[in-house]
Length: 109
View (tube, rainbow, N blue to C red):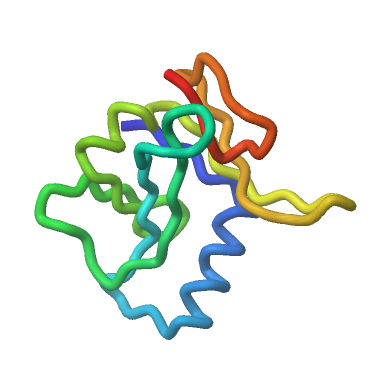
């Protein structure tokens, strides 16, 4: 599975993990969940350990956990962290998405 997390996003994830006192087995869960205004939405969470059926990626020293359902929608995605006058947050560029909404966290396949 190919999943890109930019250096800026990795830096933010490391900061969140440090704030939460994350241990050696901890990682970033990247998930696709039903919902949002376009049908699916992205989810990011720091978790203590992966589930038994997760795909585990190592990106710049950060473990990334992806469940089998989400993996089919996340192939080739780029996760970035951006800051602008309107605010800051994680952004997703998904080559598989056929549509999305203005908030940027919901998409259609």
